[in-house]
Length: 114
Image (tube, rainbow, N blue to C red):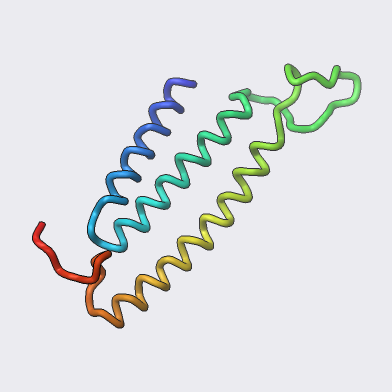
């Protein structure tokens, strides 16, 4: 399970960095989105991968980290998802406004050789 998650984080990070280096604004926005997904998965994995474990305490069960999941990474990732969605929506509005003003969606504002 850890190997699959590590590979997924690596692929998302590599794809995000590749798209960040592209000349078009939409590709840059998608690269930022993929990087935020990779960071969310990384933060979530730092809370230990544990299946069928509640993030709350159960009466009669010892309150150790072996018996419960850590709720802090879950809360951080949930907050990051909401902030990332708002950031993506804002960037798309700025992209549309920039395209309307300049007539191109290139990051530097000029059609270049590819």
